Image (cartoon, rainbow, N blue to C red; front, side, top):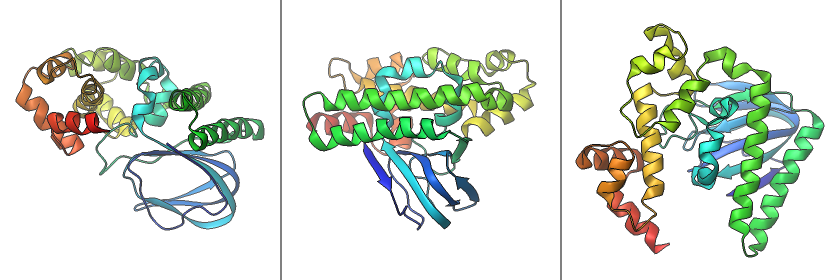
Length: 271
């Protein structure tokens, strides 16, 4: 995890192999991606998916708080976070290991000065813990990051933007709770009364993925965590995460993460 309070944000297009959360502390400017130029100002929160290229232009006294983190840091709290509709609005697309087409999220605006100060204090506590590395610092950093994510998710939910946009909060939570089961698209569609076509469009717009891609993504993220447990064999992990065919599981894992489950486990064990 990296925490920065930047006087001069990186203007050139760049990317990270982590999720990036940006809180605009003061000033204004344009946030740019390959395909867009979005005005930003004090109180805006931007979530950048891993691998997405972005930068800044036409800035005027722009100061930001940058929080760059691996999704695995939220793993212990993930099942609870997934119950928050606002969490899906901010992080559903950003959690995916696939990088080529997930949108930058400009979901929250107009945090008030006290809220910005509150979040900056949490970020600076994380930064201090990372620098000092006292015993237990990793657990504390994960807890503080979770506090930030919950705060922002609640803020987003109170605003009601996500529910109004898609009505998919219950669907995302249902998938997270039942990812190991065989889920039918018709079951998800019936949860919010959309037509099949409207549901599919709304789902892709909200998450950047088709329902099938999203389900596979959730399964693989859980499988990645299970692989850190040496007492579970790979066949058991495949079955536990909803993959009935070991070869298909290995193929999908390598497609998303670039290495096989076996290689990932071996590399993780050496760290």
